[in-house]
Length: 391
Ligand SMILES: *Cc1c(COP(=O)(O)O)cnc(C)c1O
Image 1 (cartoon, helix red, strand yellow):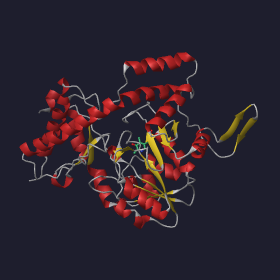
Image 2 (tube, protein in one colour; image 1 turned 135 degrees about the horizontal axis):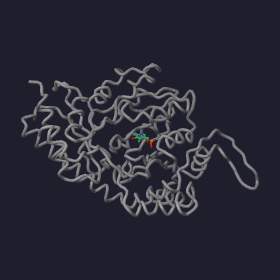
Image 3 (tube, rainbow, N blue to C red; image 1 turned 90 degrees about the vertical axis):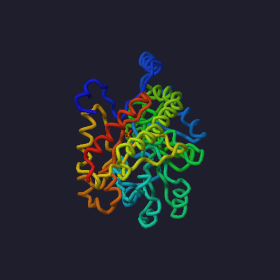
Image 4 (cartoon, helix red, strand yellow; image 1 turned 90 degrees about the horizontal axis):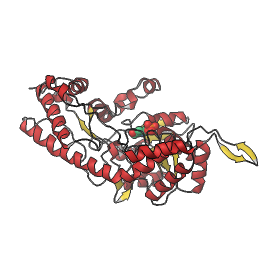
């Protein structure tokens, strides 16, 4: 494949949201209704989500970041507390820990799952540790049994950053239907999107009340009997415009999910056979965990064998882009960011995360992709790897 053929092929972004006509019509209806912010559609969406999560209380928020911050507030985590998390995540995960005044403690990742290595968590626990915040990268959950056992032994809260894991499961149970506090994001790239939004699965009515209070300025009451505020809250409510989109996405989720799985399956066989045909079987291109039961296939990520290549990831991404293929980096290790370096975190303290953060590459995967796209993307990637293979 030569770069000159690229202009004739449509660009494939790494992801693209899908909103059907019924969703667009429903948004128009909300806009015409005269009630556009949090109201009946939000209540309906929260009820639908609660049913989805086996009857547990669910509250929605303006975005996944606000959702996670409120989860920490509901758990009473603040200054002086430590929260154990992973360096391989969207920076929101550790930013929210800092934003409530607590301290993120980074534990290295497992090279296969790319999620927090639960075997290394115990060594990071101190008398100040209050919670564990695992992240399910690409929607692949951690071992929930092991996670819950650690939390129980050390009396810790678990706040799951399940932003990418809507529709994922653990031993036949949906992520969110089990666990402690479970946070999801409905941002545009996520498997279920409300454009922006998020939801938190809680344990009981008291926690749900507390979450509502933090969601709206810390108001305890508002009405004929006056108004009172007893904690510092924000303005983090989800609107009916977003909620109605979510209701429609929830109906389409099984179809989205089936398509994502089918495309992921195609990637595994296409990449393996193309690597073999290109004589690159010796190259250690790392594929995702081939788990078609637990994962919602939020992303299809490979870890590039940079030690066996003459170029870096940026060059590979540039050449893929020239061939009309969008890719992404999810994510560089958080500990390398200037803010975190200034706070004293060291990139080499978590060497596996450092390597993965430098080498991971997200290939396009979204329900609207065509089968042929998999072949085109695979061919482009393998051709580039072949071109730059060290002898
Ligand atoms: C998307 C995402 C978030 C944040 O969600 P927003 O809705 O963008 O605020 C947090 N953590 C992870 C792992 C994410 O992928």
